[in-house]
Image (tube, one colour):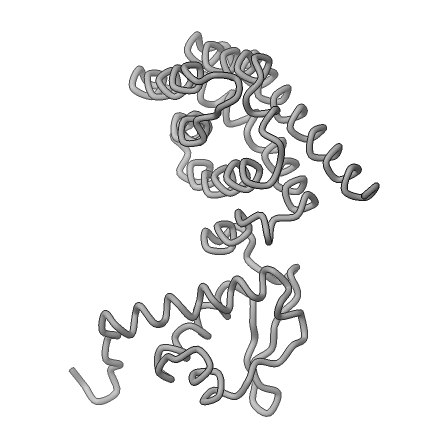
Length: 245
């Protein structure tokens, strides 16, 4: 190894780096640290987090790459506004799955994004799904169907929607699963679960599953759009309820 070549972080340092990324990232995502705020100087910040300076520097690089902070000589390390954040980053999405961070407005934004992407993904899945793909989708639906109306199998719901993305055989669409996982986790923890557990909700999932299995592209598109429109209406209702409180 040359003198100029950086030494790899050891396991302890990687653990500290991950902890700092999560701690600072969640504080920024929750607005505990607001846009324009300047972080403490390096040594003070490292001491407050009880980590080494090398781990802190690596964490700052990672958060900078996510668009959450910026560093510059003389001006220090500052929190960047949300419009600069990489909102498709898996870490950012996972932090927003926390009901303390996920607002109804954020969930509505995710629903709007899903409404743009998922109906077309279902259409592609109906066109391209293999037997194995269809089996995974139907298996997830059957798991959802086994539960009573007062319960919900969140893992099965996630598997259902992510299996459809996989069935498009488009790696970019498949990576959209992080958005779906965030939405379902956040909505499950944040809101009433009636929209996820009613017989009508199961019926809409069944329509999607069988349309894909039968290769009916437009039916798959329409059924998915219908499901997401119901989700959108429910979240808009939640926003109005909160405004009235």
